[in-house]
Image 1 (cartoon, rainbow, N blue to C red):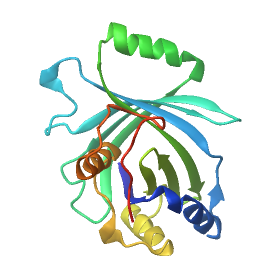
Image 2: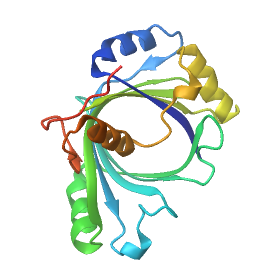
Image 3: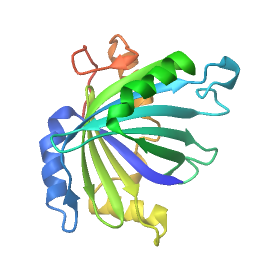
Length: 210
């Protein structure tokens, strides 16, 4: 299981967020990477991953910077007790493949398995880590997401997340409990902006406002 919380901020807050994390003793900063994530649904509508009974996301993600290029297949699902506490608990399974097999994978997904292409998004991600936690700063076309995720195998995962939320001077009760697409949809509706299935930096976007 994965234990995490997530917060959203205006894009203008990026530099101050990065500087704050760089000042925290013991955190190692990774390289800023470009990511594209595509999400697919089961070809049989009766077995949809997006149904309330399943509430899952099947994802294919590429990650690139000037040092690495990788590809990952992942499954993420909100379980019935995901929001029963103040830290999200979610099911997540990941498989890594070679980056140069990405095109063949997409061919199989689209033309052989005939999965439904539901949505995709671009973002830039910078990760700060230590033995306890992984803190991701995600630059979406509509705003910044800050994610605090447990990485400890020995400590209570919920307590690790709450500890680091306190270190970052955030309020655990103000964490956003849903996924990126929920946030994007909410912003589009509240700001009367057209909603796209494929969220990219070159499209008109709503904005997270402070």
